[in-house]
Image 1: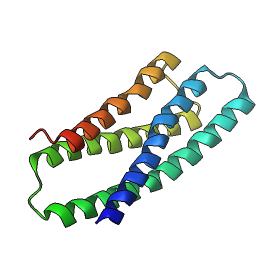
Image 2: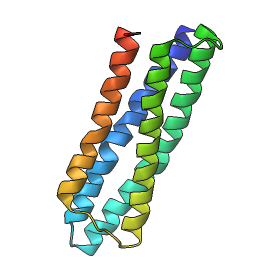
Image 3: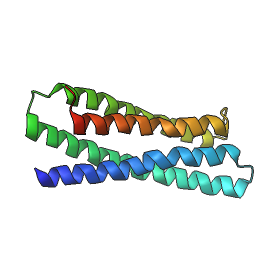
Length: 138
């Protein structure tokens, strides 16, 4: 079980690196006017999104395996709350994919300031996950 836990933690950290950095690329895309730089940023964003999507799959698979091995069908309440925030992070990541598609089409209706705020959202979701896992408040 420790191997599964270690792999889960590794893939979550790797996935979150992508989730934290991808919106930062959006900030730069929203401010950029040079076509060559925009093309380079889009390439970076596209590759990061695809790579982090695979990392998310492994994080979820190892997490589900860990939960099943440890708790079976009787999940504790704190784990239900954690899973709620995990679903929010997954939704956020998919929303980033939608934003990326708009940037690829040359459509951007948001300011770089909006993307700066958007960039901070997963920090609070991940904080909630970590607190729930460590503290197990209920």
